[in-house]
Length: 124
Image 1 (cartoon, rainbow, N blue to C red):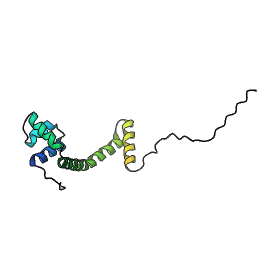
Image 2: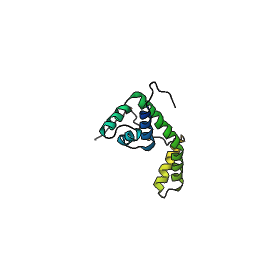
Image 3: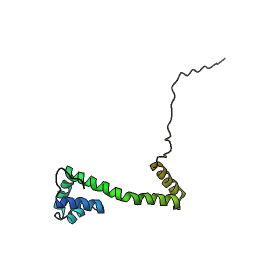
Image 4: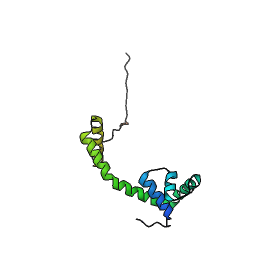
């Protein structure tokens, strides 16, 4: 765990850990972390979440959570590419795998070429 410039309180740490682990509402996370129940706890927790050192800790925890779950997500995409019932889902999963492996299809661009164009119309 990285050291932040300002130390988090136990409640702030519990608040962030609960939010990241469960994805629940701030109100529920505040109660679980030991803040007052009702609006007072929600408001105090919301203010705590706006503090830079708390936001830094939250971003760190979110990054850790995503990193831990990336292997599960990658396995799911591979599973879909190989065995989804829908060919469309198989195609999209396969394209996603190729894209992440560095084999993304070239983006389609409209190319406009500027130049001298002369039109001659003979009406005789």
